[in-house]
Amino acid sequence: MAIVELKNVAKRYGSSGNNAVDNFNLTTRDGEFVVLVGPSGCGKSTTMRMIAGLERNTGGEILIGERDVSEVPPKERDIAMVFQSYALYPHMSVAENMAFSLKLKKRPAAEIKAKVDEAAQTLGIEKLLDRKPRELSGGQRQRVALGRAIVRSPQVFLMDEPLSNLDAKLRVDMRAEIVKLHKRLKVTTFYVTHDQVEAMTMGERIVVMKDGEIQQTDTPINLYEHPANRFVAGFIGNPSMNFLRARHASGLLEGEGFRLALDEPHARTMASRGGDVWVGVRPEHLTDAADERCHVTGEVEVVETLGAVTVVQLRVGESIVTAQLAGHRQIAVGERLTLGCPSDKLHLFDVETDDVIARGSVSAMDAVTT
Ligand SMILES: Nc1ncnc2c1ncn2[C@@H]1O[C@H](COP(=O)(O)OP(=O)(O)OP(=O)(O)O)[C@@H](O)[C@H]1O
Ligand SMILES: [Mg+2]
Image (cartoon, rainbow, N blue to C red; front, side, top):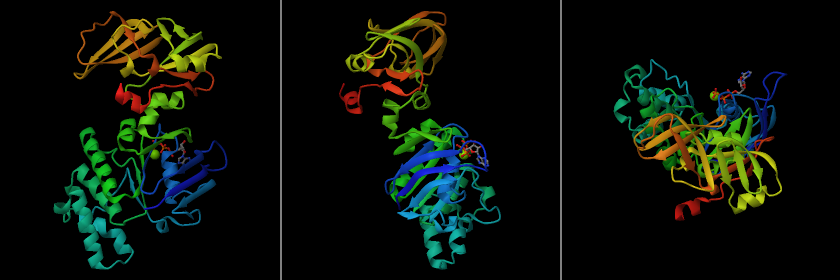
């Protein structure tokens, strides 16, 4: 276990172009599970490869357990990696695959056997130790790849989209396995995904990245309730937050097809601002209970009946607004629908910078008690 610190870390490939990673600052807790999430090309793998020592950072410094590792080669960083292409050695058995790194380190045979057995037991693959990789299912191979990392008892785990080769059901099972494994082993872990559900369910903290830069580092619930900008707001949460361009005047936000009255804290924040803002409202916060003060009206374009919820898309002026209503609703395409929205669930963003101006004022505690 170790604290990993990244201070102003940057990576530039070659001599021209933008930095693939820029100004990356993060200090983990000892044993923390940190998820890096963001769209393709935002610099997640580059960050992982720099921590591993497979890429040299071109700016800033990386410390593992208080030691600056800039000059330390990968194999001396005490890190184990599980990547998407976790190629197992096809001619070796599961046990031999798992033992390989310890054999290279010339550890005694008894110690290797004990470690492999223990890891196999942790992962529930004791019965597979004599098989070859081709005789395993995708999920079993994934476990072997994890086992290969575990036997090394590293200070830090780096996992870069380790589940992306698995089908949806297996992914859900494996992500729960990895979380359980982390609770047992308590090894500081960096986990990369571009799946925001995976990020939300696995991360103790999540780093949301875009274009090589951190947008926000926070707990899952804070990212959901208090996104720092429009990118994070739209990226975290499914279906995505709706954004409506509105004009603000004395506590009212108005646009074609909607009228939203601000609650007291929002109104105070907005008092000195006129002009346009982006209003963000999550689909699950819209309701079909009438609300005089806060409502959105439009024509229903799509109705998705999922059983537990009904997802509706409304055309509101130029925008499409998605609403997720609890239960099964009888709503017809073409119908005009008015949806209410609690004003304390609105998020307001600057139209120039996309940064948050005022945000959902309900804290996690309030939400539980109300
Ligand atoms: N070896 C390289 N040489 C030059 N540019 C690179 C190299 N590796 C990555 N890049 C660029 O750096 C940026 C970040 O890439 P990176 O692989 O870190 O993204 P990522 O967030 O892991 O994306 P994905 O989700 O697709 O895996 C991209 O613009 C990519 O094209
Ligand atoms: Mg990647």
